[in-house]
Length: 544
Image 1 (cartoon, rainbow, N blue to C red):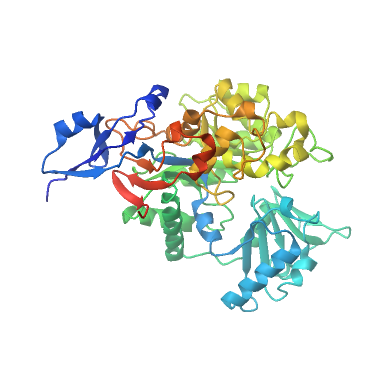
Image 2: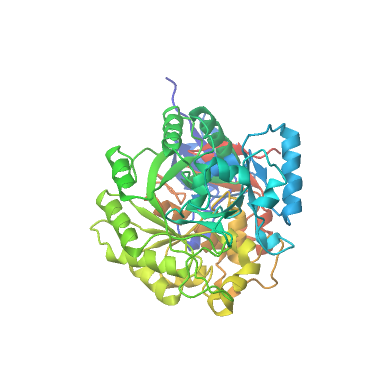
């Protein structure tokens, strides 16, 4: 065996993110050996101490280096899967949907009887109010079962053929955690909410192990192009058999084919599932530096866009409050079981009623360990809820890029007063809550620079609204970068090995075309990712 060479990365602006002072004092060089950072410092110091014929030297060409981006919550498998289906982003209504589906059928020679799947539509883009029902979808592809998911994945449109195959009719009860929309006669309209979507998904043929691994690799490659070196991913979304996902990851890890570091979140509905995972050795923290099992994931409500997020008071100009998908008692049982099995817990909670319920559960279930509980999304809260979260050291895994999409509809959903407590990241931070940045891809693009841009400007990607939406909630650039680097490492109990660039930590870093800390904020979204390095090895390099 030959000696493992050191690699010197020189002539750069290296921001360690160890603390805020480092933003004004970048280093110039870094030495990497065996996947870890051996040393950092000035160019003169590093080159003088380490340069010899056993070193490889990489010229950073005065570009900016920061710790590798870490997405605290996404669905990487579903992202890759969505690319093989019909993309319905920005459709303006049923005519637009029809045109895209018919083109898809023609281009791919889709035969009668084959499932047609699509996602990405958002009714805020529709020129006519209301959702298409099954009769309108029947006109598009009457002989093919059809399922089209809203951008949030909490609502799906299906046609009559899909309802027939899945045996969903007047007599079918709403499943726990879901709703089948019905007409005045009690017949399904073709609109399904939350866990009712699984009644259809469970009938669609699932990818095999080989196909699943190939899709995951496609997702990893796309993520690496955006500077991501670590992913905390829930890939059980709308999956009938999670064991296929588990086996795919296990095989990729054993084959050393994971280019990025994965923390797999484990979505459950029942306490028995937690115990089963635990008995199989599947619990938080088990694994290696490339693949670890993450928290137990629990779903408490729906989405704000679909008006299924659970609110304490009714939606603005509506009589409904959305839906809690489980009771406080049931949530307490799940959290308690997870803690007894030494598992971390992440609760999907968007509306203030769901966020409060999750915070209550975390405050009531005590443990001698530091469980680092997580509320994923936490889009609507209040000062009292934030204080309760802070007291119980609850982490908020938020999606700044959601603001870019949602700001035009937030007041329509919750009114002006409650909007001030929506997407309120500065308020959360000032309350003492540790915030982690994420994308929830494929719901939104997983480019962390888009999330950082939204967090610091409160704008969408077109620069609207002028001045920023509720600009008092803007984060500093340092804090926005921190929530996509430092804090997610804490969320996964890995702050000792990544999140900052320090001696002894993994050499996971991202190379940027511009100095993000000394750049016009409006230009952050346009920064180019020049390279993504994992363990000091390039997993992506931009073509120059």
